[in-house]
Amino acid sequence: MLNFLFGVLVLIFSLGQPALAGEIMFEGYYRIEIGGKPVGYTIQRYEYDPKAKTFEVTQFLRAKFGDKMFQESLKGKANDKFNPISYAYTSQVNDQLKAIDATFKGQIMTLKINDGKSDKVKVETHKVPEGTFLSSFLIYVMLQKKLPLNQAFKYSGIAEEEGASYWGKAWLESKEDKGKHVVFRVLNSFKGEEFVSKLMAVP
Image (cartoon, rainbow, N blue to C red; front, side, top):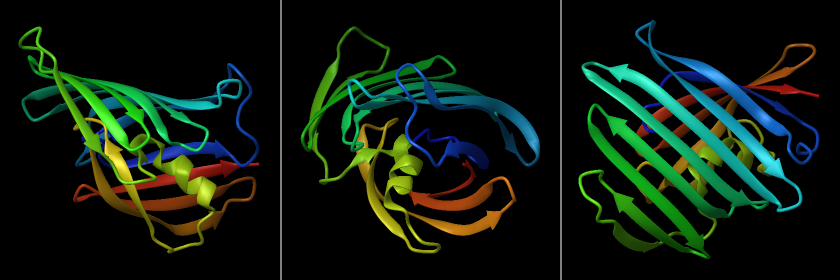
């Protein structure tokens, strides 16, 4: 999950079947605000390939926090049960660079980390809890669970920007019928941070 993504995100999703091959499940552009003032933007895209039975997420963020210009990008892949396959993450804070390439085999995560200061790549392996998924897929995993309102969903998610797994908790706080669509308010606690998302379901 992109670490500096504060505020409210509005996602639109379908209650029907996943998109066909080559089609996009969801894509959106968001403005990031702090104290009511715009500081940057983020773009998200989710896709499903029925032939390979894989989900993909692509994200890009650019924002300025204080005197720091922040950019990051993510390309992640998971199977049709949201078990992680791989992801590539890059970030730049002013002139400081970081890149993580991760692959997964069962519960073993292998990381290749480069700090942008040399050609040397640091390789790490970690065992993650069973059922761990890329945190960027949280909303879609929750939709698979069909959770009732205010029932907490405890999960283990990969913080892609760190290459580490953390326990989190998310729940549907409210559901509001708007006639042609339904709006869900989702609360998420992850890595000691609080996130709010609004989901608009269309038939």
